[in-house]
Length: 96
Image 1 (cartoon, rainbow, N blue to C red):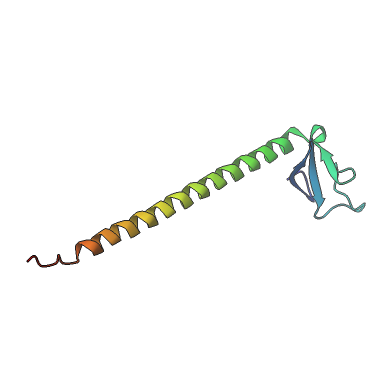
Image 2 (cartoon, rainbow, N blue to C red; image 1 turned 90 degrees about the vertical axis):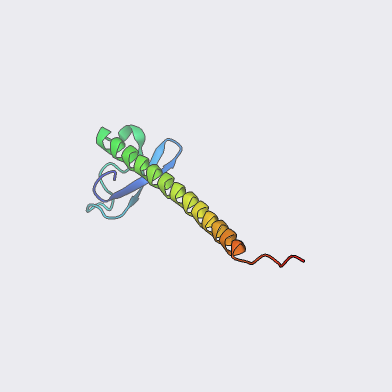
């Protein structure tokens, strides 16, 4: 996300925390000092990529929540209508 060999996105304060997942011969990816990359040091492309990833993550979460809510409502209404149909098939007691 933040560059070659860096996985970022966890925010602490105003810094983006970057983990080492690969790297150069010195053991640290370029641009990472002490394990964090300040937001001011990120390139505009990296900032845009982080914001875009965050946006798509939020959209996916909203979609899953919406889908879950409607699935539960559908199951409730199906059980309710099934119960009403089952009650309707019970014959009325004879009068008299």
